Image (tube, rainbow, N blue to C red; front, side, top):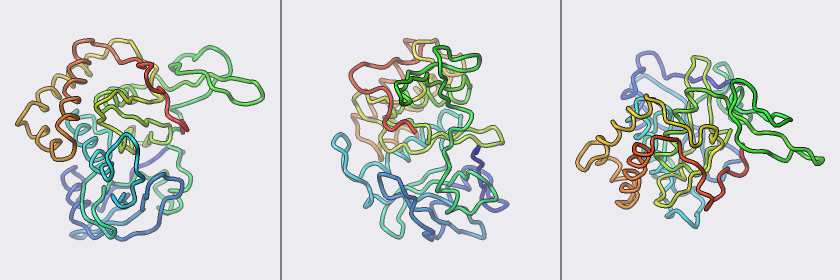
Length: 289
């Protein structure tokens, strides 16, 4: 089922107002989202007469990873949101770093699978990838689709994994290349009926080494759009030393990681094409959903 965004109460409509609600509101834990590798708590947040559902990921609930510093994933989620906002594409739901019932963590506006469904129930089954990903038995992607890779579907059969040739997905592929997203799965894509697309779960991002793992390889090696080129030029300016975005990122990621972001933007601008798998790291996340 396509995902729909449940907005905060009337009068809380701008990005800044949503950030303020998430940052200053009272967090009430509703339940834990099962199946996540780290602690992910579904909450409500209320402030100044407005309320919303949100996700709270406390640092204390992060599972240690061999290639990322302990207790650092929440900051990377916030950094990904800041870069998304800097592009003007708004591909990541409003996200803040704040204290909560279980200590410091990331708090992000919840994206519902059904506006009329209870938040806890919605969390159990939303895949988020409806209409954006498909498996095609045969070797051709078909009109409107981009091939990614062949997948084993059992009983000795294979199918072609494809994603939609969709401008929103293409923007997300550029964002992932900039933030070096190591985990772009199908379940991390949320398409709203109002036409917006969101990406979530950005904890494994901003590594200095090439960690890009994604299901959105369909444009690999193809020229970037004029829009993407313009956005990247703007990002380059915003990442300059002393610029507000660079200053905010410096509080969330290491100096080496910030330098790596600048290098990736520079490389994308000068090559003018979508990146291709490096061959030094699995290019598709597992599991892919």
